Image (cartoon, rainbow, N blue to C red):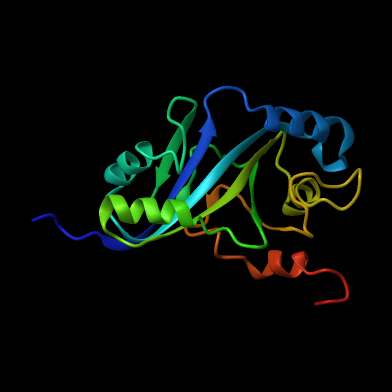
Length: 195
């Protein structure tokens, strides 16, 4: 008899194996046209899936995700699974990580149905985009926010706050993260005069 999976959270970070055209373009625009991007050393884009519910061990989660086109294409992308909080391997002290998710919902019903068909377990799957910003030197949260949130043609780039919600983290990326919107970011996301 197979042991029943326990309820937990898993994060799957999916990134192209080849150079990401969207990240390359955003990096060039940030360095040349956006005030907050002048000290940017590199910019990476990943898709983040958060799975919550009765999940098996990390190796089995990785195997399931590898078998489904609902999550990623293993011929073109790599997937890193994380089931414990802590520092991501892509971050250091000069790195900020921005989560950008649609305001209208991040649930992925097709992925949830596929998982239930394969495992017999009902889970929730959410998806967002993660931008990993590495700077030449330590920059504070305000500088990372300056690059993240679009304000006008010369301020911000990665998130349109009218249609998307965002959150920033340093090396310690929260687990879970997509559902949790820190109060400081939520307050900053509120249009002026509406707080």
